[in-house]
Length: 382
View 1 (cartoon, rainbow, N blue to C red):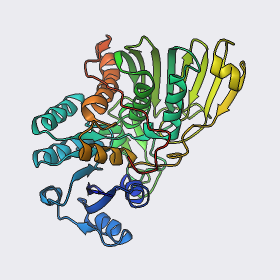
View 2: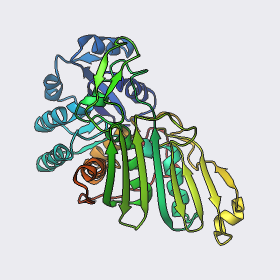
View 3: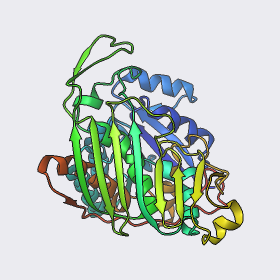
View 4: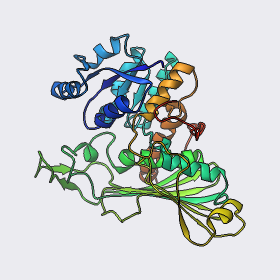
């Protein structure tokens, strides 16, 4: 089995699950080496995974012909600079979310990749999990009829109580709840409902400062420079209207951080798109849904097992595995920047832009739905 060789730029918190899953789940990937501005982080990761090669800096990694794909796991505000340098060096890039801190930067990266004939893609890949993929299958089977509307919620009171250095969530490029958590929700929505056509947004900041209570920065006060309550209304090309709320300002409500889809025959609850698995729930309101009536009756909420028995647990890096197979075979990755992650970034930015300008924002980038995972797929193999 041919493997694709991955070079890590950044081995902070986000790298932990990538290192584990590439090593244990993704049978067609191998890690060539790693680098980080904090040398000690790279040394710890190298020691834990059998003595991985450590590059002095990212440019040394880019120059290594043994690296087939650069995995960009830096902080959101650094994604653009790192991905651009890797593309300029001739390397395909898979980046953690978001693609860049601004839509203009993301668009520049996509144009650079196209000019150089290189693949560019990125997270989130949770839409490849059993939850969203299973929900997509049920929608395609017309279980709840034609989708009419949807709602998505990500409610929390911020990251300063647990994150070791949460400042960038509040005052750095790429910060704020929409760019931080919105990618999971919007990526799932477009993979279930298709491309977004128009966005209307309203945003605000409830608390002008935040006080860190986690270690090691307990007591440090953060100035909040990005909106921390962001609400969007999304009109999809299909005619579906969805609302999305992302916030760091309120306490979470049990069971609400999921996606709801309202159809002409019934409703569906799609599990939290920040996870891979979770329960799919359906309530059928009409007897004329043949599959639902035959299998689940109507009128009550029923929990449905996903038809997929893979990607139930945290499987971050499977999008990278799909990206690597696309590189080998010449097909389009499911998480292509040109056809997915840039579209998602434009939608996310449009919420704040609409709020600031007081108008609806037309979404211009394409989204092209890639094939669902085969029900016979083997875990970690594409």
